Amino acid sequence: MSHPTAHASSSHHGSGLMRTLRGDQGSATAELVLLIPVLLLAVWFLVYCSRLPDARLRLEDAAHQATRAASQARSPSNAARQARSTATAALGQAGIACQSLTVDTRGSLQPGSTVTVTVSCTVGLYDLALLQLPGTTVLQARFAAPVDVYRGRAPGAATATSIDAPQEGP
Image 1 (tube, rainbow, N blue to C red):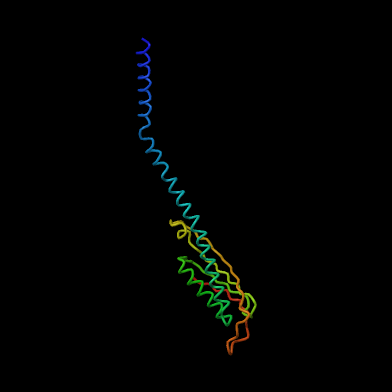
Image 2 (image 1 turned 60 degrees about the vertical axis):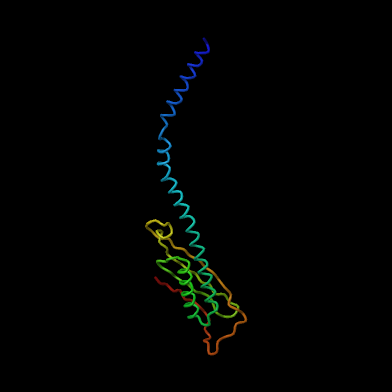
């Protein structure tokens, strides 16, 4: 007699388990629906966190290129102009759209001296975050390069070698 009772209780226990499992149907779908926005927000945050340092690296590269161009110029006015045009071209090729760009060129073109270029770029957050976020952030990079000690002067070049030329633009 103990045998049928054990069988009956195990069958009763089994149907309770099935009843519990049937009550959980659809909960995975509900959990997934609640989890998807959180996962999308996390992915968006990772994209934003990677694009900001990437934009800074590209701006540093533009400052490096602009400084090199300025250090090879023969006159202070050409140094400032070349720094600005080089920075603008480098940022354009890098895909960085500055709402406001400032290229500040300082130093001397005297052989052995140093030329320093600071590039400041105001970037919209909507561009960095890939969403229509309001606001801007200013990215800035500075680089210094030596003027070649062995470079000769151009015939008839002016003797002024000091550069003090911030240039702003759109």
